[in-house]
Image (cartoon, rainbow, N blue to C red; front, side, top):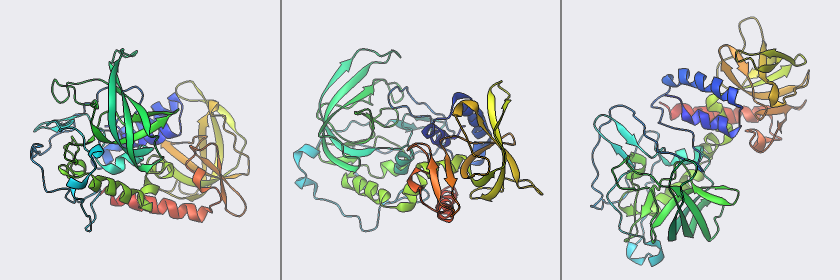
Length: 405
């Protein structure tokens, strides 16, 4: 199965179609070496279809959502953990606006004895940050209305919601509209993914051109019931440990994650790029040349000397510090002969590919400057030294190794 987390790293730097095809094939080969790669798919929040992923045999203990548990419990492994000093709130004192509707007994991810029918593409809270959630907000639905089918013949619902609280991220306006695609069948015949008038939800939101969408496939994950208790509609441990507890346990956990500099670094564009690419410092030794690749498309090539490999194995072969780096001609890439750069390099079929949005120049004082736009993984670190970038890379790789064991 392809590693979809890496796909997101490429999506953030917008590689061209040929580059995506080549890198997807590369990751298809390499992904078998990774531990329990989750069933990711590329997330396009504006146009979405049902996700059904078959992931093998799981052991499942059914949770009866008609019975309230004693609250969230900590978990081990690479999942987020509630702190030992977690406090709860007297639910009888919750304002009425934070209370929603009685929660139906359904799950959007159903783990059976022989397969997983999975409509929730996230498996833990940290996954949301890897996919660049803009905000977490608690909302109450004022009204909903159906819209005509879109070009994909999917019925749609638009909900007007009042934002009760922006838990984290960019502040969300007091009133917004959220579009959802209507579908069912993954968890039974009843449609379960749509928000309901009067319902209260904790939503991971992305903003695009002033419009707001629920990140992933437009499913609702966390819902707050008429007693102020939260339900995840999920079988995954990192979510269902909150079921039947105080909703603040979830909001506090989101805040704890976002205050962890290591997690935020590992889920940044820089951290995500380190998962699918190799970071190196090089000096360009030639003018650019053009040649045709196996698809008949023009590639630009440079000869470069590797000064330092900041992540992964040494890029150079024994007895030589020089490599040929390449990009696509339509990348509008221009590296200066004699110039020094930090590059994220994709190694495919013994060739080294770079992307024009993943470059930083290095001056004589070993200080970097990003080359490109705000999507450049180096963008937040202009003015850092190469040594400081090495520290960030090491910190990220240590985190990834720890959480992939």
